[in-house]
Length: 585
Image 1 (cartoon, one colour):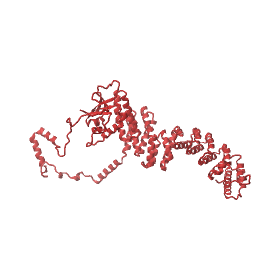
Image 2 (cartoon, helix red, strand yellow; image 1 turned 90 degrees about the vertical axis):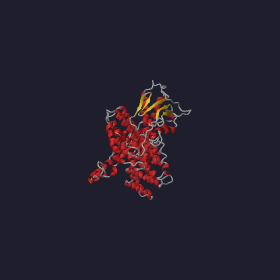
Image 3 (cartoon, one colour; image 1 turned 135 degrees about the vertical axis):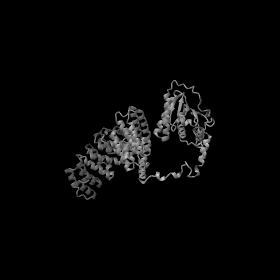
Image 4 (cartoon, one colour; image 1 turned 180 degrees about the horizontal axis):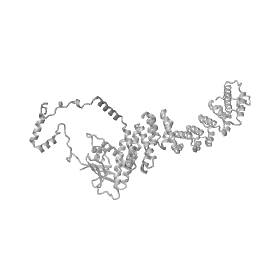
């Protein structure tokens, strides 16, 4: 037996197990280590290094190794064809060679190996890469020993035997070699050499022609006896088509769904939940939204049932749903939808999104605001609305998010869903630093119709952003909020409104008319018909806006003030007066 060469800095290794003190180390910890190693290898094959599923399994493997190093500084393992032994105890066993770790080492001559403290810190990912590369080797390519030599691992050492040197080489028949040599030996043993010679002579005469007695020729077979008639051929083609068109994925999932519903078999439920956890990221990355949605639907149904799962399985199902609802998963999904990497079916996408949890609200709110595809945008908005109804507390928490886009979307939903208990937070958002948040908060305050939120709109009348000032003025007018009359009066008398553009002037004047200020007719009549100290009238725009405001007041006094200006020479003012008298606008 030969041991791998080591340099001066490599950890020490040896064949003896006498130094291991097993009194304080349960066998189950070592068994669990190899279970976790198998899962980490599968995750390494399926996912890239940035995937959370892969990272979780690698972290579990690191933790398992770290727990061992708290008691020992290395773990020597003896390799047999179908198992690993540790101090004479079986700690890993697999009857299937296809995925057996033991056979992976055994077939290339490795009979012992040692894991050293520090592997999990310095070489764990490299170690996983080596094992997965070895699994994918072709018979004519490198073997595991070559790969380990190239990797030059310092914290994994091993001993091996040279199969050729020890005379264990398997004979590989070459083309033309006696495929019947074993048969010939049996005939000789049973009947003697003479019988063997007779059999050989008969075989040499087999090509003598069809008249040779006792021999079978190709002419004895009529191919028409074994051909299919047209009806049979059509039936066979139909069966092939049906088989090719089968929803095999759906049938497999249905079988898993049936079996996970049986709480009498907790181990099987555990295994199926692990399968779901592996399948979901794969389905999402390939755009198989219907399949992913069906798994989420099944998990939600199981969680809703009282006796379908025990507490451990319920926790696992909750974790799976939380992972799918996480920010990173949804960000990748939405990016794929936007890039066209996934062509979404609206029903399939809606079916998937409606099963997501509270954690999905933030990413989906951003996606709903930024999605460019109208179909995707509508589906996400509808899904967000459904999730927000189910998890209203999570929606309110989004009002405190750092992402302004998320806050804007959340405050809009708070208003449309009539979450009146959040009126105070909506009022606070009217002073948010992001203009889009302040604008959304104005809409929400209008929909909630709560005094604390409506009163906060008054400060928005002097917001530095024009759109927000206009929105606040329109909102107060729509609500006919009487306490705002004084603030409107101050604005329409100010120089600032005279320097604003026409749309802002109209918004303020019309809203002032709607709040029905008792002194409003007097104020507006003076602006429409009055003259200043030097006998000058207001500008045509201000007088036209005053006329529109009087039209909103709908009182005899307001009508009388408008009649005074009905013969006005300024066409802009005359047009506004006419519209106000007719009740237009």
